Length: 128
Image 1 (tube, rainbow, N blue to C red):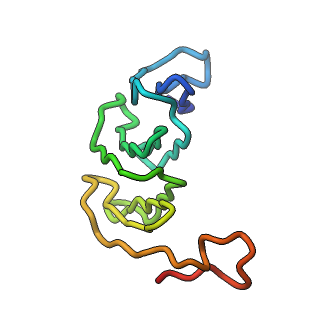
Image 2 (cartoon, rainbow, N blue to C red; image 1 turned 90 degrees about the horizontal axis):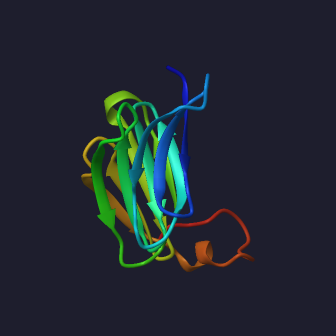
């Protein structure tokens, strides 16, 4: 069934059927803020909650696959790759990190260079 995935400022992640608006599943992602970012990738969803909580959910029934709490706020997440080799790239103010989408296993980290942090930097952002 075709569906859309939604998140709320009250910390909920849900799946809603496109044909009739019926809620298929609903999960509380966090009780201490809202969900700021939601990315769909195949059979997975990745959410980012206020305060640095990153979670991966199964789209079929909303089961939580993995979660990771960061000490500093998460700016954004990107999902890359295809099939079993998908990755979640987590961008924080001081670090860029890659994790496997399936299990959340850490793959690599890189410090974010000062040139990437400033809005008036000339040229493409650089990793340190």
